[in-house]
Image (cartoon, rainbow over all chains, first blue to last red; front, side, top):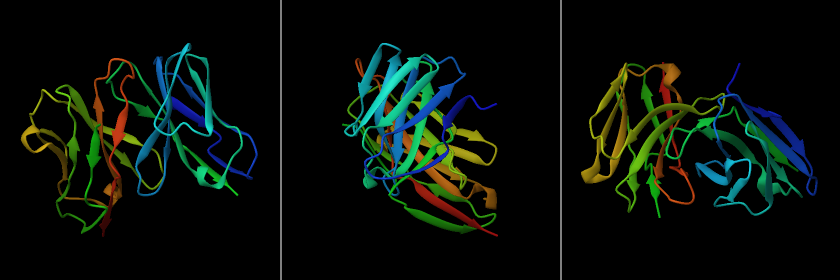
Length: 112
Length: 117
């Protein structure tokens, strides 16, 4: 079984809809991250969490919110989806600061 | 602010050729880590290597090798005797030591490598 899982893997939604992307991990890592990937732009950090009580904004957090329900679960929400949020979204985990980040399989989101 | 540049947007080679993917980084810190990730057509991100700023030894893993040179702020990746299965997007990434914000990875824009049979 994969150590970092994301659901759904693919999602199509309409402008204005609320959508939640979920991430679960079995690696036992404290740190979790959400990134988005756009063609030609690499990956950009949306939010990150050191533990259940510690959540921080990344470089592109506008239009997104997160919830760390447990050490193993970190959800990303789009409160009112817009077309330029169409992207590939990745969840990642790491054990400590500066340690390797391990990525989930990604969620492809299309906002119409 | 940290920055990673992968100047080669796309590279196309014929199978069995050697290919080098360039990565140049900018950082003001003396303690940092460099990474390479592979993204095959299926889309997942696969970790390849992690190197800290105090270890300039080159590393070889099978057909893969990495050349880290602090003097030129480069961390280049070479695939020897390339194979079709090496076709993927390759990302170089940099992580600095930050007291409050943890290990944030800054990614380059990626290099699309196509290996033709």
